[in-house]
Length: 96
Image 1 (cartoon, rainbow, N blue to C red):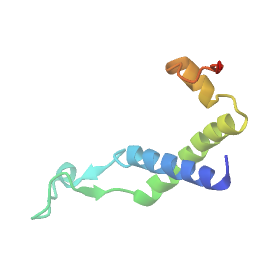
Image 2: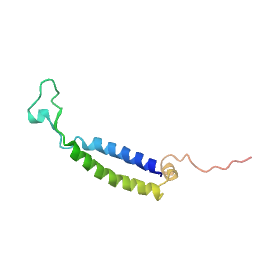
Image 3: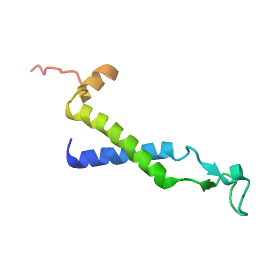
Image 4: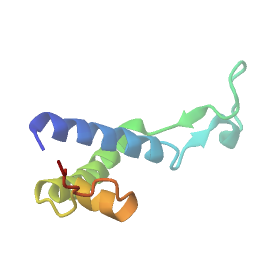
């Protein structure tokens, strides 16, 4: 895995984790009973995005470390995944 691949993998993990963390402990206008006219009751009132971004970064570093180790040390290869799921990459000899 190259540097660019590692950065892209981290970015994908970070954004997927962030989308899972955003709704945690979210207080909406409807929860507080202070609905601003012209907005939806489900609009966030207290979102704590900076704190959630730091939490996301911590979780993402751990997940990325695990996945990068698996990739770099070749604990699981593409051929292993194929053998377990699809069995399409079998070695076949070409006979003339």
